Length: 172
Image 1 (cartoon, rainbow, N blue to C red):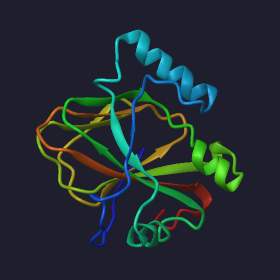
Image 2: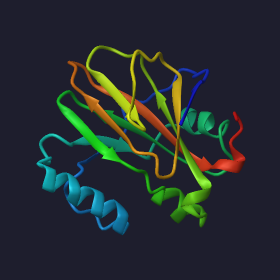
Image 3: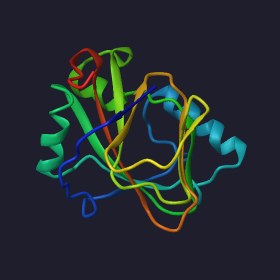
């Protein structure tokens, strides 16, 4: 885990074709991903408290920004409503490994906060809370680093995830 500051251009991210997901409904993705979801369900998490919206269909300005970070990348924006959480998990880097035929172990994710922190917005990685971020603050997440996200506030929380091949990271 590393924290960095990025200069974000103005990006359009609130009006995207959102897909609503949760962390307990089977998805047909990797076995590791499904096992994580089963663990959450057994712990008492439900569709009603793990829902989030995600879009991989981002605007060109967002793709252009993502290309300043990696040559090969996937990019998505997530929208987390108040009262919802993404329980502690590790990323499998499923999308990038599928799209570019690259081993997940060779990838990393840059989790970018799109808006300034407000009370109730929460992110944690390796049991270290991240609070009071400002727009453009980012966390580099390596494979197998446990992290979680929650929105216990009163307004939506927006983040962007740019996942790429670690050796191609242009800001390192």
